[in-house]
Image (tube, rainbow, N blue to C red; front, side, top):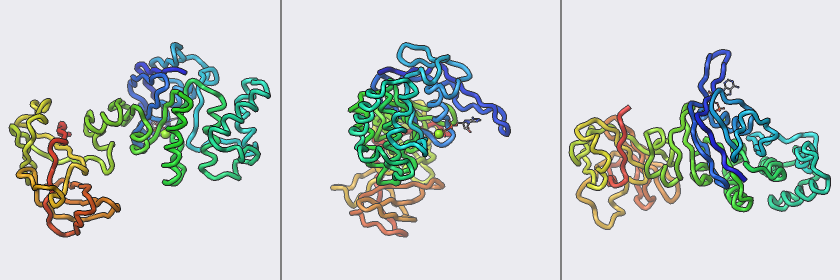
Length: 361
Ligand code: ADP
Ligand code: MG
């Protein structure tokens, strides 16, 4: 098994219409041996390009890529000891599943008996023994996805690369496969780089997450760290569901003035925010840190606002509530026990211990 390292990786494409496209802009990171690292970011931010450069399917414009101790800039894809699982599974339609699994190994001139052994092992790990003699068209999306993973497993690579492998599956199957992939990672003890645009998938699968936007790495951190201490508004607004709320404000000492309300910032929370004193800032507060005072044992004396609820959405155990502070639209996520109704006024407590401040854009 192996670590993967990007040093000052830049990738520029020459696009017929758009001219030069900077797909990856000076990326630096290390994926540790046996780590499950997730790349996450909106469509077009450079995730697939990054993965394809690890695989050697795309050559970087500048910078160095290492797999293990080996500088692989000039190493052919088939000699990089990696296996990639694609979003569309890329199975050969005319071959049986067994032949699909054997294909890569045959190319590597693996002895027949060993190929059989590896297929039997992978089939057992993935519970696909009963599918081996079928053709891809006879399988469901979830089953095809398993075969695509199986094809990677039989190669026993140092590094697994996954490009949005679950995005063609329905929601329920996606959750199930997510759990299976986590278990598979533990079982194989492999280094995995996994790309997705889905922040929930990233947060649940990744031991560490690389957040990308417009070709630039925004933050590399554990899920907890991304949630608690986002580097900037992009990360704060990308992680969490629904994402963090933002409101224009001005900080004066420990008072945070928005267009319509004044909040008191707890002392400990001001550490690191001195630079904003007397300045315009953006207050970030997560929907789950806005609470219904009805459900609190005692109503706090500060940081409670009256909010006019525009819309209330039922999620079952929780409600999503929508209201405005000045021109900023906010979302709260409160327990359904609050029994809130739209077009009513309610008291909401803002847990400022959990707020973040950001530079205005
Ligand atoms: P993601 O996987 O995050 O959606 P990609 O890595 O596929 O993003 O693409 C990053 C950027 O590079 C996009 O602007 C995309 O249009 C551009 N791009 C990707 N591949 C090519 C290519 N072969 N030619 C020109 N532009 C490309
Ligand atoms: Mg992509």
